[in-house]
Image (cartoon, rainbow, N blue to C red):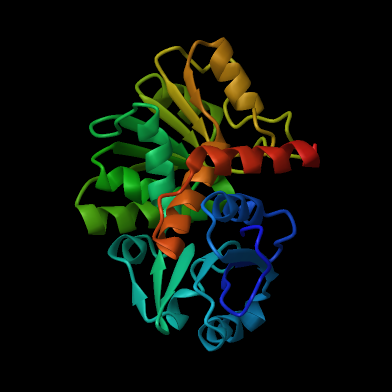
Length: 291
């Protein structure tokens, strides 16, 4: 949003989810719009599962230019859209919807946001052995983009939701014709697999505030040859990242994926190059206020 008042010409974008109170997207997007002097405003909308269809119909009716989509709507939103980007279709989840003259197209910038965060640090996933912890929505996006980029995947998920990992591996194999190993997320499997891994990705919620003292990886298993990417961004530095640094591993924090997925969505909404550093600073301010 610029310093000019909101008017009849102001273009509206936003994010829908439930809950939505703690989203950092408005801070990031409005800071970016203000810096580029764009007559846009970005707001957060709490939308329940029962009202999702009405909300998307309202997007068309009100001429809302773009919506980010967060929990629990990333899969459920798909039937309400006119088109799906090929990558989002493979993943089976959408986190960004763009309105072009009444036609709604769904994208998945979570996947590309993860990849950009990885590659901006100079880490190329092609040919690398990746140990992915978790098989939920975030892991789904991450695993597909890694498969598309030619990485070798092992997915570990907790026993209660082990079928999620099996289903995810099957879906990847069907789309890319590559084998994906799966296993239960436990110390024995972790110890066996981590020694041969190049990249470790935590796509679980373990270590997220208010349980910041937890880590999905037992102390002592991390080593200096690893790249450790923890997608948890609150706290900014998780226990996993702290212990990875002590072990000499290279680390990437979850704020990077958050910022890059937002930046890629911003570019789809506005047609302008996103001021990534500014969006990161805006997100960090929100994180510090919430401490």
